[in-house]
Length: 88
Image (tube, rainbow, N blue to C red; front, side, top):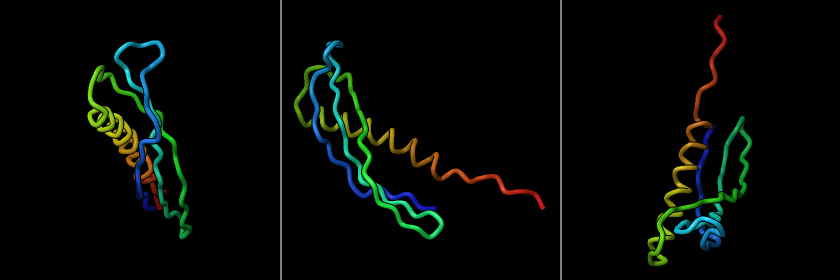
């Protein structure tokens, strides 16, 4: 099984409605997956956040994409875990 991240795009971001200093947004990720000889391509929208406060838009974009990368690393690790083989 393979799990490939094709692209990441920050769709939108803005200040959190209730928490001062928190920025929230959505990152769209294109993923390709091979499983049992079948290739599947799909998109995944990840909700991301950062407690960066007042910063330039590039720093905010970087922080939000870093949060998405952490989420994707966790997802990829779960997909790559080997299933236990039955004893013969």
